Image (cartoon, rainbow, N blue to C red):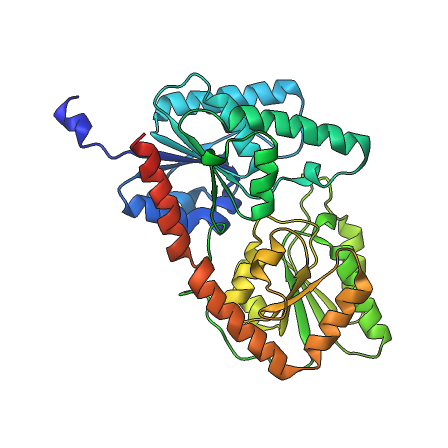
Length: 381
């Protein structure tokens, strides 16, 4: 190997669906990789985030793809485009963020020698939640594809909760290729606890406005609380996601915003400002990988209410950092909100414990060290 080539830094490429998702979920990790000596490339659909990506010294590459289901022709085109970028960049490590990049990336790297792969499986997608015969067929196809692609040599896959670990193992992914790591972490230095706001008790939801997030159950619970004479406010921070099959129509959301006690904030970049306005964080989701909204709420010292489903129960420890409720049960959700709304001491106890758990289990420092160790493990072969 020529001397000048030996001194070149190893290259790490992140494959992400959207530039905004990279910036909101993976920016600290990419900075840590850069500090560890990697030349960082970001392959994603470029929207408004190119300048912010390049400001950190990363190299941005625009992909022409969409997240919603597409035909075989679009799939082949995306795989070819990605493969072309990989042949040009020649990274030592490809880090696929989320399920679709893991599948697309797994197809694109076939036959490329010397390329190690990490897959972050941040939940198993809407196909895993679909019912009926169509849902069963989707899960069978998903399982077969993952079983083939994730067992590639020099490939490790990271899951965020024990249920997803078990599901991938059942799909045939070798357990020695799986790692359980708590998401992308949460910046406990930037996000700090603050006092509760003045005024009526306020519950906040932060995230995409999807049916799979349990938004309709949350609205029904809020209506029940209002019918009980409780003047509890509800903040909704987020926007629909038209490329997700469970995205809620904008007209329905605008209708909610017209109801008493409901405020729709739209997209909020500084989520800490939402938690500063709220007393309680809520996420009635049907299934998660490890939800960033609850991680950030816990770092801000807010008590939480969530459904007792994979991903949520890893953050919300029932009776310690918050309350868990059954899925799609608005009455139970309303009862939990009423319980916390009427007990300041319980909110404070849960919030303090949530902050401590964020610092000791979920902080970016802990997670970054675990991911960096995987990079080095793969580089060593």
